[in-house]
Image 1 (cartoon, chains in turn orange, blue):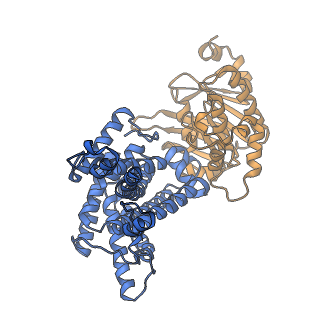
Image 2: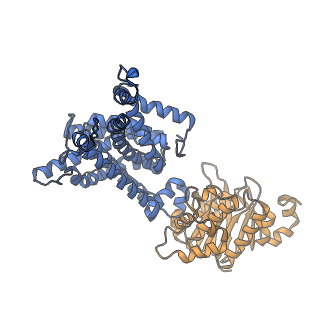
Image 3: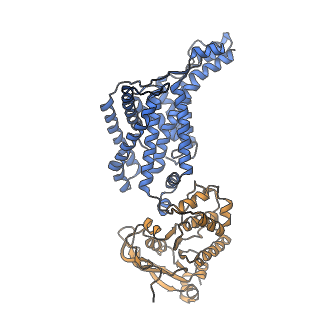
Length: 236
Length: 336
């Protein structure tokens, strides 16, 4: 089998002396959506940060398009085509929506207007509010700014840490639709989600993590159909 | 006529000096607030950075004067200002490389950086006194007045005169130009926007590929330029003395905090609030009151709320009042 586009393999590590991740493996194919679910404290966000280089690994590798990027800093990974949307503090609140997008494209030296139009096409409300400070927007709109900022680098992989945390169910569905749209343009998506059912429904691949290790791995629908997964993690 | 005389006396003794002093404090406070916004600590060495920049400018001025170069009616120091800025920028960049970077890598707490800046302050303080001495130095030349009190009286026929010194006019004009350029830089250029982004959300700025060392370097250069400009304007307006510049730290910090640390607009507003408070509280209002009140009510005393020796107490009082009621300052800076 060919290697996935992005893979964090056998990742072991943590913030201090104690490891949080124990041989955890995550992967995503080009243009597909991979979702990480699991109970609180399972290390979902930590696993994501490990893939992005925000956590020192004691063992394991991260490879992007066949290249070993384990030793690269997060900034260097951005330059390699990865983009990350943190769960909180993911926008520049004092800057306008448009400036947020410009900062997303900071590394680019070419004309960014085309990409900006694409982002506005994806999230039309942002175009309307482009001169407004991002901090004044609603929760859902802020998430759109956050995703838009990440898309401005024209990434090959978009990593989202709980993009729907704290937004209403309607906004959540809307965001998921937009995420599918992004994936259709060929961008791989790796995301952590608290709303496991909805997320697994759109997932090409789902990872159930428990205590920093893989418990179940399958396609999203297959995980949804698995009685054990349903009983333990999806509430029946 | 008496009302006009009172107004002119007010303009002459309160408004014009306050405006010039406020512009100087605003420029100083802008430097403090930029450092606070980007490097996240209160730079106690800022007053002595001003002293250092002014010293280099004075040395440059003497060099130019010796060479027979002058700026005509304007002070020669304006020609030497770019030199002062360049040398000061080199000094603070060197200090950052040698001192601050070490603590930044260690992710030192802001309080530690404040104490580090205190050490830097003592060193700079020593350098300045060692090179140029502790005496008071006047380095203004060129035309002294834009308009003298006598000319004004002859022109208007009023008994009160309004004198505007060249240095006061230069201070205000320079401050306006510098502030406009700074805001253009912060709001319109890529580098300026990256500085605001870094100040707003450091982690996200890093995720966006903004190079922190570059942002820090640009910030130091801007702080050096602002400090040197503020110091030279203050020195032209009054005089240069190493100790006075060290003391200026108090009203400058008061301005930055009153306006809201980290907010450039706040620093400017704070500068004028502090300057006008100091001047109005320590001004003897007898003259103005005598014009305005009927003879029977004319005051016997000086009608001075506080002696000028207490002007720093005014900065502190305002600082405490603002922090009690608006802990983040007038323009919602970062809370301290």
